[in-house]
Length: 346
Image (cartoon, rainbow, N blue to C red; front, side):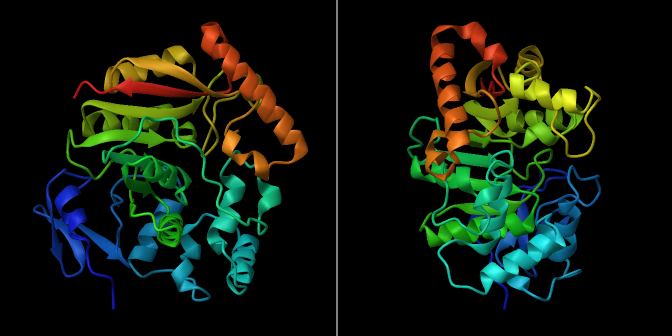
């Protein structure tokens, strides 16, 4: 028997095609124009089937939601929509067969959590690496975590007092996020959706957060996602989005490795601060910048106990330069990773 539909989804989501209100219909969500969205074990799958996806696993999520291509070895883990290799799937299954505190899917997804720096932790985690969220206390405000994956930033936001909706195109990642939230007794909600077509009404969200997501979009798709943030935020709402910069030392190294050619597929796109200020200013509101890190993307102080000694040294150097950048603002342009903050005009 499928899980009942959470009434919150009916009251607070909207059709991502025409932005119409939704009703429950035979276990799905339906808008007045006939667009239907399946619900899988209580999770709405709000992906648009009429537009190309930004990542191939979105199509796998749609297929799974339709009951097609189910991996019979562990249907409850939604392996077919995780975007991992067959070898990695076998690793997840091996971990799932052994009792443990860490969700077996998260045990593998952690390798992509911080710029692939945590490969050494696959299958060895003994705790969930939840980072510190640099936002004011939520006080019950609604926050949307765009590209939530297994939910580490969603959990961080909930612990700061936000009501959280996590969004990701991977059904498998969203299911893992929901399992972890339940394990940690965090009352977050999660849906499967596309950042370019948020299934939310206009001017209804207090805060949008996104980390290590839009960097993989083409510039056109990233602008579309940023425009959606501006659409759904309330007047005075905050968008806080992490992005890689074009002139950070580590970013320059990676650009040089690919001979400075234009990025394709899921490769990282690197942005100038001027370009970020322009696109956020056009779609959300005036932008300001805060350093996230030097020498890489994803270095978080909260993750220090999980790092190798070499990574810890890099983290300490990054944190030192971050402190200097607060006093010497031009140093921001040399950071590898920045947060863009923009207050919505509404």
